[in-house]
Length: 289
Image (cartoon, rainbow, N blue to C red; front, side, top):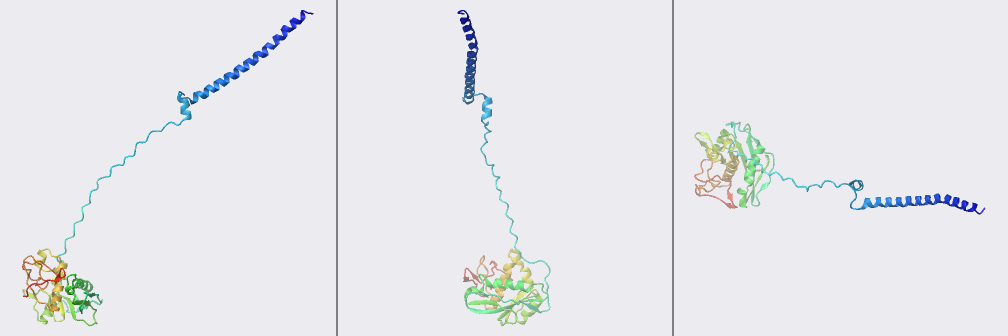
């Protein structure tokens, strides 16, 4: 019996040994898992991590954009300015030489021209069949009489256009050459040159503008490049000057402006064309003829 007890003891120890081995195996596996997990975490965060780990966690840097450089502006080339149109020296086309002697009148009242002095009222009329518009002629006559530089700059005269049917002091007529010649001759003035009515004139109460001169100016003005508009302003102020009591004057010297009362339709005598009785606010005149 005493021999049987040791034998049982050895068998019991033999049964406990496998359980202890299993516990050690489990412990070793657990420790190994902890070590492997820690190693993985350390590998992902340390500077020496492999390129695959960086590519997965960090976006790859994009290409660096070059600084924007403004493209140079094309050189600005000024466009050539359009040449100024040449002044009109005379109107082309035939000019009626005669008409019926009847007139159409501007029916519009005009403003008072001038700042002080006696008011003289005038009418404007254009011969029927002349081909000219009475309003257009009237407006140009008014522009000439308004200045600056016209007779109203004296400060002692004012002018006002009135329509037909109202009281007036004189009438400004635009007439064909034949009619103008007849009207001037009736007023004691011969406007013929070479046997044909050529210039304009003033008869009592009538300022008579020759249609030939209104449309074609005079040859020496045309040769000198003097605009037709300047000649028109001259002829209106010259003949209205006669109506206001002024007489012909001479050129005061070569190269100087011609007095408005010089017979510029016939000659300049070395003066330059000038349509105004007042220059720089002062009466400009030459010696009496």
